Image 1 (cartoon, one colour):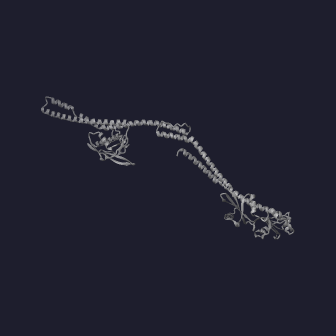
Image 2: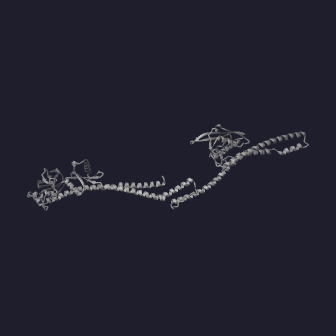
Image 3: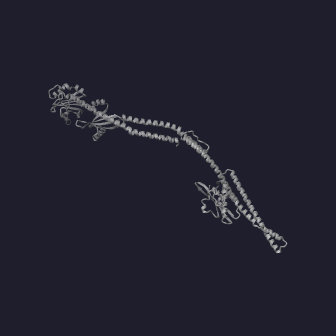
Length: 591
């Protein structure tokens, strides 16, 4: 991945991490707040239901207070006002006061009036029950004093009713009480509809005997936990809150449930989606702007710098320059790179000059080494020639000739001198023949020197050429150029398998001179033993290295061998055990 892609990836990762953190914060910290608000709204709604029911109970109690603290009611309870019922509890009056139950008891708790209003039929009906007959409602008739009251919910055969009970006293509130006045309002569907319209809450009241499975679960939980209310999820769009409605004795009689739309959580969900979407759009915009700015300010210059550096590295031209005209770190880097190129160019020129001088010295060393190998036999013959020339005492021969020419010499002496002169002449002829042979050998040595110099001259003028070379032919050509040593006869034996070897890839000139150097070293090793004869064996063996075929060419001699301490150094450049020698060819063999 290039630097542009990496930088965009880093930016994208950073923005993604920020977006993820934003989502986590919104989901964990913010969104639960909407859920809590929704739960609180549901709790408030169910509380409004209870308050609405309590408000209805209060309304019943206020109406009851007007009638229970009235002289007409006081007299009726005492049995003196026989027109009281017709004047005060007509159908129209009950309808206007929204009363469904009216009961009056005298001082000894005997019922003297019981009215049940049927709103559906819009008439007063007679039933076979009265509130005062219920065991659980006896408290309604047992008021402790003249100012006390009892209000609440009672479960009747016609359904739940909102009731109130007060003592019957005079209009000025004075007693003693002459009985008990009870008002009731059925908590039926019509009243529930009125309450729904009033408080704008969708709720329902369910008798405990008719609870559904879900409602029964909520009812059991409210009983077990003694919570004032319980809120749960009805479905993905609604919450439902539950609360228990208890009677005047504190016993549960109804389960109130209120549904609320999940508008708040849906708003929170939309806020979450909008926040994430807005951040995503912002992130895309930021990435686009950053990509343009980074391309202009950083990535583009870096790419151009990289391309120029790669091109310089490809063509190897140290004379080219990057030269970015910038004042920032990239510009500084380009100028320092140009300065480094200039330093490298200067160092390369110095290195080339040094390499040239080193190459000249190495070539001269190799030439001198080859010339030494060729001149060594000639030098040996010259030394022997000098010994032969200087070995004969010419003054003795001159003295013998003078004495032989003298007239005073005796015949016997003259015969001896004649024999001496004959032997001297024979010795001179033998010396002359030896000198001639040595001169002929020296001439051959000089011809080989000339051949070596010619090969070196051609090698220096013509670029080296790698060819497929017959190893056997190259060895034969090399043996023909090996100088002959006067004091030792060496037989070079070539193994038959050399002829069957496949051609090798090499430079003919170098291979011949390497072999010649090895042959000369072998002959010198044989000479160093003091022997007058020796053998050199040339063998070859094919082997594979890393899947490529190689030929191991071995040259064995019966000379003095190589000292063990020199085995690790024989392939080092310039190593030799000879005086004034430069062992360059073994190093070339290693290469």
